[in-house]
Every structure is written in structure tokens, then in C-alpha cells.
Image (cartoon, rainbow, N blue to C red; front, side, top):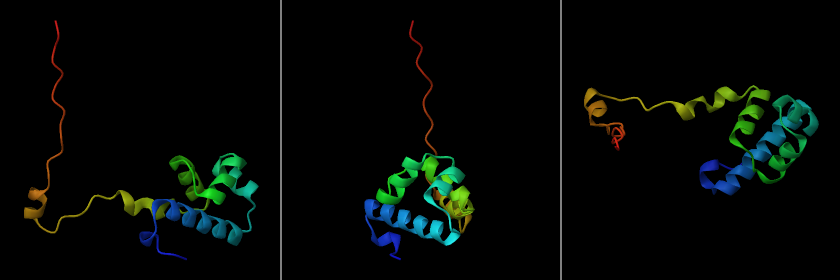
Length: 103
């Protein structure tokens, strides 16, 4: 198993697909079983295993089918601040200006 941080995006996608295939075989599921559990077409699932190409929602459905969705949770946590100064130094969120009225 290759570390993902050493791979290009295309290589990482193929590596993840390979890991999902290994997990599928470990569970004793066929591609048909896995596609059905993930609520996706068999053709889409087969393409994913072969090429690594997949829509993000479909990848989430596969993660749910394998009970692995919580493994993605750390991706979406904001960083914690070590001090108040660090929190105050962070960039402010951008806010759009109000629309100008045209007459």
C-alpha cells in the first residue's frame, strides 16, 4: 500500500480504488453487491475500480456502504487555535458588498 501523499491525484485515485476493491473482497462482496449497497449503477462502480474516476457523492455512498464515512470526518474540521493571539491573527472571512441599485 502506497502512501497517498507521495502520489499524483490520478495515482491516488487509482490507489484508493484499489483499496476499496481489496476491502470489497475482504467482505466477500461482488461488484454487483457493492454497487447495490452504495446505491449506484454497476457500470459506475466498475469504472471506479478500473480507473479511480468517481463522483464525490458516489464515493461517499461507497464509504457509507462499508461503514467508513467517519474516516472522512477529520477532513472537515477547522484547525484549533493554540492561543487567543493565534485566533485573532487569522484572516477575516470575506463578505460580499451589497448590490448596487440601478434605476
